[in-house]
Image (cartoon, rainbow over all chains, first blue to last red; front, side):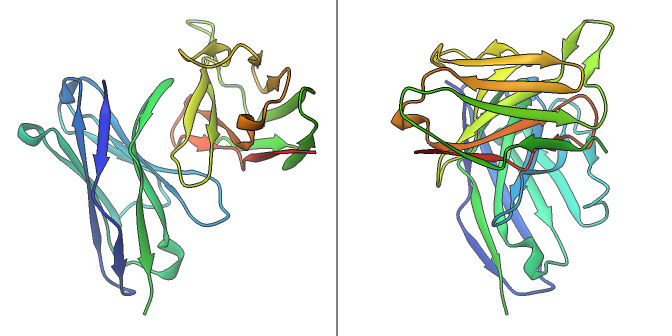
Amino acid sequence: QVQLLQSGAEVKKPGASVKISCKASGYTFTTYAMHWVRQAPGQRLEWMGWLDAGNGDTKYSQRFQGRVTITRDTSASTAYMELSSLTSEDTAVYYCAILAGWAYWGQGTLVTVSS
Amino acid sequence: DIVMTQSPDSLAVSLGERATINCKSSQSVLYSSNNKNYLAWYQQKPGQPPKVLFYWASTRESGVPDRFSGSGSGTDFTLTISSLQAEDVAVYHCHQYYSTPWTFGQGTKVEIK
């Protein structure tokens, strides 16, 4: 069965960067795009961008353009999302997900940004 | 960006009664070439990731009880729970995957009255 296993919670200071991993199993990693979605406290789900796991192409939400980088390691069936220049507004649970209508989601990674 | 607006923000329904959630998109999410609505519904319980209930607006995900139904087309969509059960207490989100940036509704919290 498809599983997406994310790295653990992070605490970062303002101005720092965070890199979250998402290890996929149960399918051929390069078959499906990997999306990243975040959920800040009390806010709606917010799509950040996606990665074509086959060729490495990416597309980012304009809201995060310049701050977010999504990459992959096909040999490890793992996708990564790095967000830079963190502020307290970036405190959220970050999810990797396969969103193809049907969907699989990782368990989420809490990122807390605090001085 | 396509703005997704759900109504109501919350609702309390008695066990066994019907719950109806509406979702309106700021532009059509119906792709004319394949006649598919690029709209999904998710259920999210505290501390858990969202779980897909429907995609293509009305295609039920495997394992989703048939008391749940999804309907609508174009810009107006509805999620209905025909007979609310205790385990249905959750936040429900609609989501358009018609165009980037993909967007979500603000969520509707369903509780027991």
